[in-house]
Length: 125
Image (cartoon, rainbow, N blue to C red; front, top):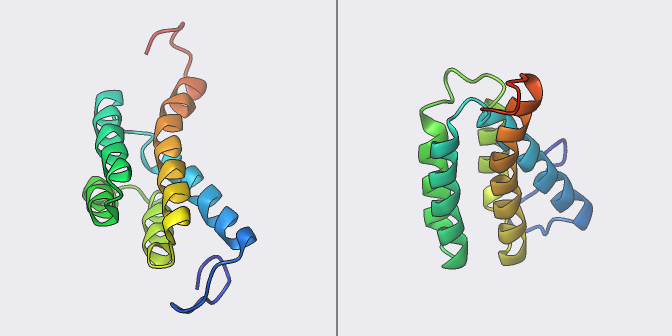
């Protein structure tokens, strides 16, 4: 079941379901990675972008799961990101893979913005 909709492996996702998954992945990635360092997020984004460029879905998922594995136990809010990603991954067509992958990367990038908006450091991190 993905976001209240039962989807079998043979069934194609509708555009609305795809958009919900993409939006949810982006939002939950930002929540999950909000406590990680900027340097770590930059390295992770670089690796994920290379996986997308080479269209290596397996490497993308492996990299992302390694990144989320260490923080999942302590990050209750972030567990939704891992669950959503794992539930929807098998349903990603080639086009949906790119949309989801870029949404996750944008979510990781926006995690920095949510930190800066929460605490005012006078323009410094």
